Image (cartoon, rainbow, N blue to C red):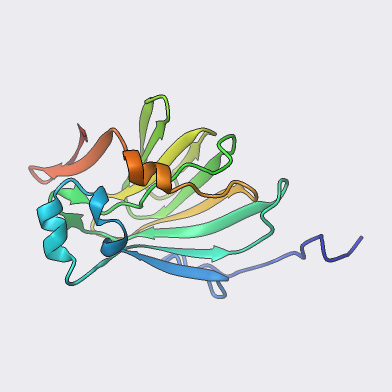
Length: 188
């Protein structure tokens, strides 16, 4: 059965070394100026704002935002730090809280920081060929602790949506910072 409601099959080539899609419907860079208040060291963030470095990139193939469909993207968190805190994604809950997400790390190293609104926290290592399941009701953020881009293939329900505002308002309870040359998880 074919009509305008039913999507057509899609194929896309992915450059696993860069995370880029050959024909993204959406590609954006998230710069420090769009998230500098999320970092612990505001003085260091202010000093970097002049250069306004790209912190992470997202490449998406937009598909129907409907239950039963799947959205997917490539997330590329670049290497670097603001003060002693590693580059990270803004982090988000899904607008539809009862939806989950899968992250398959294809390159780089770091962590997936996850937290519920009730304050439960989990942190999982991200390394190539590691798959992290983010359950429903958990906010999540990728953190790059290595010297190369942290690249993940992400899949989530079509109708999940993104709620960045809750994280912008209250943040996470943990941070990943460099101490003595190593990543360390600290309380906020």
